[in-house]
Image (cartoon, rainbow, N blue to C red):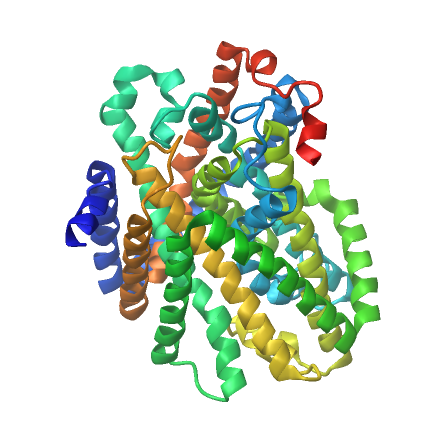
Length: 525
């Protein structure tokens, strides 16, 4: 048994994994010791980037949407990522559910319920705070966060990654491999390729630790309200351990038995929670408000997409500053999402992969935001829960249990909310663990899965890093660093889009790697 464990450990490529881990530790320790000073410094740097490069993030996101539509509806869209004569690995519902669980995660439970409050207190376009229009902007912006731009950021490196492992049958599932057609063998196999791969791992390991640390309060605030106890580090530790157990088991079981089952189950559970809120809560208001919000968003979508608040000069609104942070932070996660999407997209066409990632998570996010946000707005308007008073000057997550407690059978609602949030975070971290293990593995990823024990080892490393940083106060600086890491990732991401087109052009894949006539009927059988 010991020999087998050692064998699994040696399946990992230490040349990229160890430097990435050491880099995170080296930057985390001094930032944790001097937390307030480092936060001030990092926030100053990030604010400067927002001030100087906000236009760049906005155009970056829009360019990726345009690139996604181009690849989907051009000749490249029909290229099959794998053998054109084989069925896709998952049914469309399973495939969409896995992408939703990975793309949205537990964050939607927080942003859907209380993100509108930040905008209502500080609305864009000169709207009066706490007005009716500000409330509409609040939920419209929450939907905008989980819309086409962010999911384009997540998926647009996937075509290149999927092509190298499912069509080219390259053994290593790495960014350097995807860029081989651009930089050549010498760069890819040398120091340049290692730097690209280490850069990816640093962003993902730090992002995973931050997600575990920042996702925990979504659960702890509601559990503390349910049990009528204070939020303590001990409670946070207990919840984190439960989480670790869940996503370690799921990671060990793999995609088929772990991620797929949890993802599809959570779709039904989240649907049940939404129906419960509609029936037990203000269902008519929620549906009316959802309709108004979608109309408001669609009417102002282009205006919001290009919003820099330039004429305000010395001031910025929450929407402008937060939107840039959101795109920057999403860029940090872009390669992780793309690599995972690439791995599970065997047998799917480029068009199916891109459009599923653009549409399925967007649809669920809009519904979740409509139900959760609409519920919170109704409680505020009726005065039943002073939502804006609660969040002003405090963590907005304080308002979530207060809103849920206003429901009949409030305990059931909170338990369901906690379970859905926990499963979402479990599948997100499970997918992260799987991807890191696949990325660092020496196995042939075009034919095999990453070692089970290697996935558990990665899960343990992420958890240990998160718990240490939570205890010593290093998560906040690491969160800002994760946002800053998005800048080089953007360059890499754009390179992979070019690489995907270049590889398909060289192979004339739109001629030789497409589904033959009659295969669609075979798919339905």
